[in-house]
Image 1 (cartoon, rainbow, N blue to C red):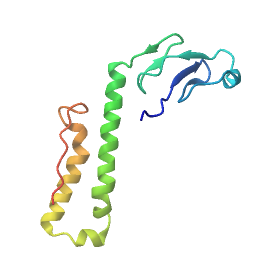
Image 2: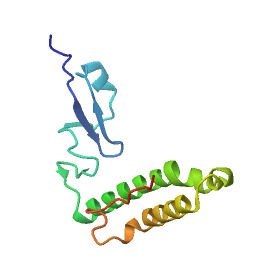
Image 3: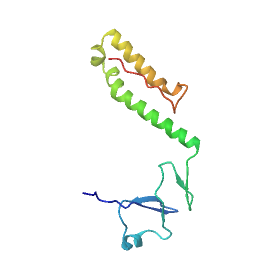
Image 4: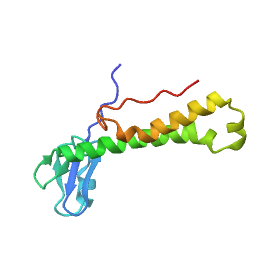
Length: 131
């Protein structure tokens, strides 16, 4: 059995920007779009911009900035879910041995210093949390 085929379409308006549908759009719906709306190719990536006639690829600087943001988000998530909930809780921290506390402190420091790595943001070596 075949699945449902989704017909995605892209639209652009100079003041409203880009939007995308996931089904065939009826003439009645298109009539509600603002004057000047045009159908465009689907947006190739979140970082592409539309210049009024075509999609423009992101610059290397924009790609680097997005890569940095992604690494920082992952780092912040690891800090929040694996480290800070223990380190900032005196009872949980006290349950750790001195060795475990040192490992946790070293892991936290390594996560915070991830942006200082030679390959950041494209070649990041993630620290390993102690057991």
